[in-house]
Length: 385
Image 1 (spheres, rainbow, N blue to C red):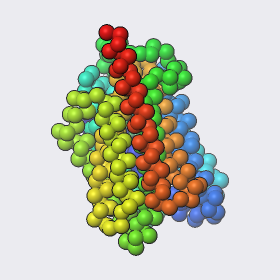
Image 2 (cartoon, helix red, strand yellow):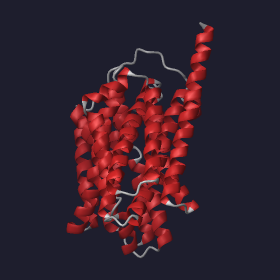
Image 3 (cartoon, rainbow, N blue to C red):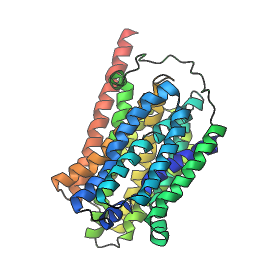
Image 4 (cartoon, one colour):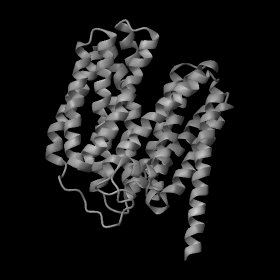
C-alpha cells in the first residue's frame, strides 16, 4: 500500500515536471509567438489552481479514492489530446484541461496518505511523500527531454497517459475505501473555504506553501541567468537544481525524518524558511561554482524542513470532513506562489541578485510574523492558566 501511494505521488508530479523542457519548444513549433508561448505555459498553473480547489470540495463529499480514480482517468485522456493539436489555440485549450484535471491528483493523493496514516506520525508520513516529490523533480525534466528528443514530444504525453490508465486500475485494487478514524478534536468545525482560511494554523500552512514556491519560482527563473552571467556551462543550472533536490531527498528518507514528529511543526517551518532565505542571500553574492553548490545544499536543507512540517501541520488541524478542501487550498497556494515568484521578478526586471534578496525578504518577513504570533499565543495561554 505505502509503495503504491509513493508511486502515485511520483507519477502525479512527474506529469508536471516532464513538461518543463518541452512545452515552450512545442508551442513554438506550432507557430506561437513569444507572448502566446508564455500564456500557454502559464495556462497549466492557472487551471491547476481551480482544479485543486474543486478537488478539495469533491474529496470531502465523495472521498479521496473516487477523486483520485477519476483524476487519473481524465488527466490521462487530456494527455492524449496533445498528440492531435495542430494550432497554438488548440494547445492552449488542451493545457487548460490538462491543468484542471491534474489539479485533482495531488490533493487527492495527499489526502489518501493522511487519511490512512497513524496519528502522531504525520510529519514522517509527509517527509516520505516528499521523497517522491524530490525524485520526480529530478527525473521528470530528464524524462521529458530524453523521450522528446528520441521519439518525439507526443510520446512524452502518451507514455505518461498509459501509466495513468494503469494506475486507474490499480487504485481500485489497492486503496482502501475506509480511512483511519481520527480520535482527536479538530478546530474549526466549519467546512467552508473561508473558515479554513480563517483558521490560524491552516493559514500559516498556506503561507508556508506560498513562500516556498515563490522562492522556487525565483530560483528557477534567476539561477540559469546567474550561471550564464558567471560564464559557467548552461548544464550546471540543471546540476545545481538536482543538488538541492538530492539534499532534500536524503533528509526526507533518512532517520532524520523522525524530527518532524518530535518537534512542533511551526518551529521546524520557521527554521526551514530562515535557512532557505539564508541560502538565497548567499546566492546573491556568490561568484564561484563550488560556493553555488554549497548554497544549493543549504537551500535543499531548508526545503526538506519546510515541506513536511507545513503539510503535517495541515493534517494535524483538519479532519475527514475538511482535509480535502484544505489540501486543495494548500496546493492552490503552491501554484500561486510559483507563478508569482517568476512573474513578479520578471516584471520588475531586476538582476538575479536582487531577485534572490526579494525572495529572501518575503521568507524572513513571513517567518517573523509567525514567530510573533506564536509568542503572543503562548503568552496569552500562560496568562489564562
